[in-house]
Amino acid sequence: MLASFPDGVFKVLRTVTENIRVITLADNEMKAVSSKFFTTFTQLRELDLQGNVLTKLPDSVSEMKHLTSINLANNKFSIFPDKLTEIATLEHIDLQGNSLTEVPLEKLSDMPSLKWLNVKSNPLDSNTKSALQSPRKFDILSTAES
Image (tube, rainbow, N blue to C red; front, side):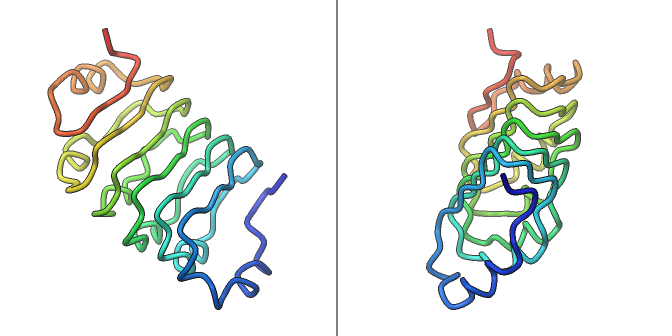
């Protein structure tokens, strides 16, 4: 089980980071992901961090200019990681099974590539639940579905 991403790996991977497209760090015990991770793996397309104990992402996540999919399901987020809305290429955001009460729907609606958002199994407040009912240009999976 990883509690954090080992710093030594950055040194080993320095020459190949631009070739790394997918990283899976699912089902560990990571409490945080360092800024260095996001500034190093700038070419990532997919990042799977589900099943950890993350509560936030560093602002440097917005450096991920090619990221299309991020899986943050089953973590400890109580606040939506707003910087994700700055990633123009992001198509899929999975935040199922966290502790979110609100989702920044206006910012998400401005995202050019977003196709899919999963916020099932979150204690969303009633305003957010009703806002999720409005038609959007992306699919929303939520517990409010009929």
